[in-house]
Image 1 (tube, rainbow, N blue to C red):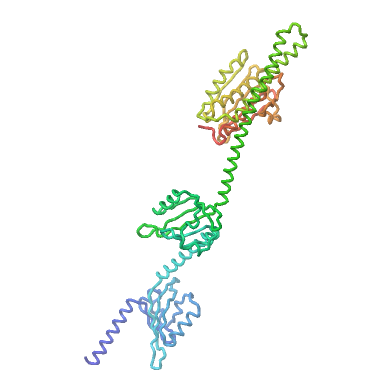
Image 2: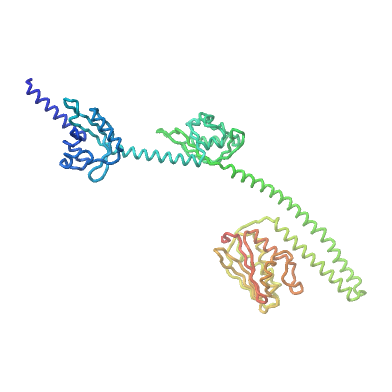
Length: 504
């Protein structure tokens, strides 16, 4: 081949290589002072400058300001010595957006060994850098979360066989083992032997199936002390869906468990004391029922015998005193009955069921018919919503309240008694209202005490136990009772059942 043909062939090969390079890379050529003498289409496309806007400029036209002065100085120092420089550069496009390029700058030297031009070949790595930034941010977030978790919780990681591969400082602190003593061990090193075998098997069965396990575990520290942890174990699975590691996150609940144990102990002690007190009350009730009734029966009997056998011979004053002995013995018997009834309420079981108060009131009114005979009494029964209550005890409540209303309205003509219900804060309130004697509200706090009365015995009979029994029954149902009254204008007794909600 002739020299001329060889030259043409070489030039063609060079042209082909340049065309291939232009297709693949971002290319720019500068003179020794860094002035741009050539850019290819890819350079114009990524920088968003036209070729005319770039030729004659230096690379400060695309300087992003991201790199420190030392970075640029090192670049120029390297290529100025005729060395190839490689690195990653962040540039700024004409529209202000940024892009990254992986850059190789090759100096071409003249006969004196000095650079006569620089060819910069770049590849666009903007997406890769963006991905790296995202990964970096993700890793930072993960590390921040891990640091926060380590500050808050007791953390351990194990391999699929349960061997510990990581523990944080809180794990070491609560277990009193060093990290070196724990890594490579399994959790049997802190096993307290408190939990049955089935408990541990259930735990491993759950996490072995890739499910999260949650529960409370009692562990044993190195010094032999025990501690409780609220535990969540999360399995992390491999591509085959099998656990590759387990992350256990725990919270120290030792103090809470101690408090719970203390409460259980106190409850046991309280139950014991209640049992003892109940036995005492049983003995007291037996004593009242038998030991006190016997002399009362004797007093009443002897007084009656004296009246029957010697009544004609006794002076009037003696007969009057004997009658008083007999009457007071009977009253004392009624007081004993009331006290026993009050005492039994504490021991009587509460058997709740769905109750219709209206039906209860009707039965009470039938039983109290003798109290209304020969009197002008008007009784109205309004809506009484169903409730959950002990039928026998609710009957006793209405019996006491309605009989009281009849008793204290005895002097009224007509006596008016209204039985109904209303609503307060979403709760049903039952009420029994009368137009009787009433009372001063300043004495209302005495109403529900045992043997407490607001009227003299000669005005209205009674033992002063009925309302105390009513209050005990209402309180046992979780409700409350109160009264509103005015002297000679009657009284209204209100009560609720099941404090939260007495509707059925």
